[in-house]
Image 1 (cartoon, helix red, strand yellow):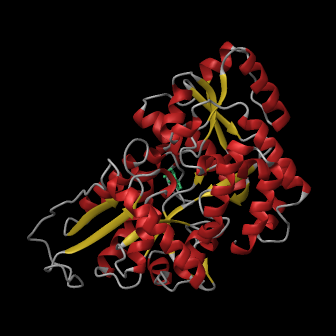
Image 2 (cartoon, protein in one colour; image 1 turned 180 degrees about the vertical axis):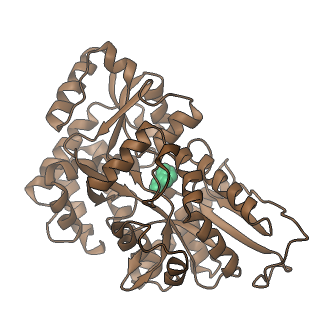
Length: 437
Ligand code: GAL
């Protein structure tokens, strides 16, 4: 664990510099609140309580949901000041490093975005940095309001360590409907069908699949879906439980197919981020993209596209009936100042109202089972239904399937594979990293 943390801190220090010099500075949204409201006595900030919310939700397609949640919280708790400490960079590329530095320096934010699963458990819970939230779950009657599968992802032993605000789906392909119609494309349900569709599009001069792997998690996300397609959900789980080796012939086959998929992407993929690559599909310059459904939030709220008119969606080929779970959660770090105010924020975040303010804008579905489906568009409604019956599997790229140490090494291996296409080197690198899972 010590070794893991020193590596993590080194990475943090290396990345923190780029995060701090980024053009997009962390924004700070605050509400002065009403000064004549009762003061929270738990505060040591001049009598005014405050909650600092740390995430990577800045800018297009990321920020709208968070701002809606903050604005609801401001309405309900004008006496508590909110500091929006968001650090730009998809999938937390920069934010996670800044967070690691702060946690190591005993300067935790009041609450921070963390994926349920190993990112929460193997990093912050294992390091004894998080306070259990069982009392909050009991006080709010949440034990039967969140699905057991999600409660498990945010628990360690008998303790629950964070509150899920959403569920994003990672094994979705969004496609440009006009491009599909123009070229008479049918929705592929298997990888073989996908390759046939991709050949047809490529022959017609259309980029079949958009990729923006300036940050390599985007390519890792494709690879994890190919793994799920080749292994099936149950053996995917065994792979990340260390019961199947990365040198297994099905992982080798997945790597080969992943390589083949990369033959169909836009040439400038290495210079695009996820928004830039989603834009190619929105503009009809590429036919499809495999992206978590934050892309749906981006299409609808930022680019003003209409679901099922401008763009459609289908499960990543070979994973129909499966659901790659990405859940954004927030917990209570030990040693923060405004514990009560932070619990108030977590209470709003875990409420039906909070989830229904956040998720329709974010593109995700509510983590709660009793949220109001009428607040969601067709995509949201379909996904809410799928989540109830699908076989769930945790995302690797988004921190649920394996520790942050392994995810970092997997991203590096993917990055090298994208340029070198050496299947043997790739699976060996993953197998060598497996002890860190
Ligand atoms: C994921 C996160 C999503 C979204 C995405 C792109 O890791 O869970 O909420 O923000 O990154 O940045």
